[in-house]
Length: 310
Image 1 (cartoon, rainbow, N blue to C red):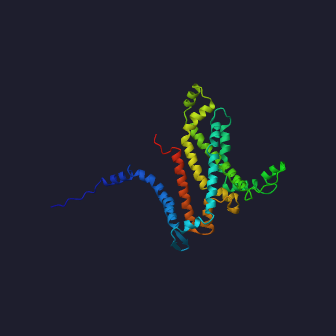
Image 2 (image 1 turned 45 degrees about the horizontal axis):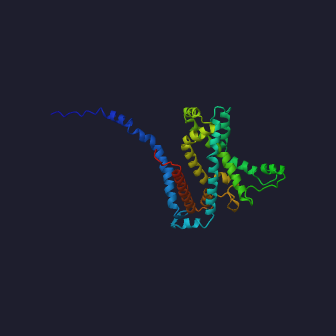
Image 3 (image 1 turned 45 degrees about the vertical axis):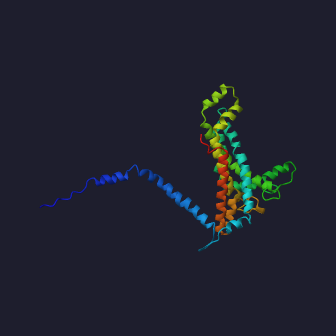
């Protein structure tokens, strides 16, 4: 009997091709880079930081110390750093959340000429290097008689003031707040302009037909429809305020905080983790910052009605 010849399966290449161009596999290929990046550069560092916050980390040696790092924080400058960050966050939110709405309304109006130019001018500070901005504002708020602000005070026969690190702590906060508001005002204005452009113009026309003036239209049409944008700006402002670091470090000449003035939570984390090589304490500060920011933002989202189902 003749043996049957084995005929190769001609459909195998087609199967391979169908697997390569599978619609079920394609989404995982596109999402894969993000998932890998998220796991390696976010989730793994967060888990490692949480573990190290309960350890004493030395070169080549780690020792479990329990809650010692957290108890140590409340006996150090950490309380001053938390207080400074909270005050800074409250004041910046009070300025950088409502005030950009006013500028955005004017820059979105059809009656304003040169809107593109003014939008660029407001947004330009966000593109300036923090190092350059910090150095420039350190010169503006300098303690010399020839510094810009002291020169202006001299015109009115007012004695020069040591703005940064002086006996009056409010001057230190003023310098820091002016720098940060100057830097981030334009970014929030752009957010609000985007929100304003999504509001249908028919609503303003209907309000005008009903006899509403400009203020009433702003109060009853613009503000309610800008609520999602306001919540977003408030959320990122709280995060930015609590996590502020570069501005204070550059303004205070590389992290020299006289009497704890200008010291923030992230600045204290950097001091412990990098300057003093106390990685465990630095991770404990980072974990506290995460919890504080998360709790504050959740409370803010709860009060602004973010979780309400429409």
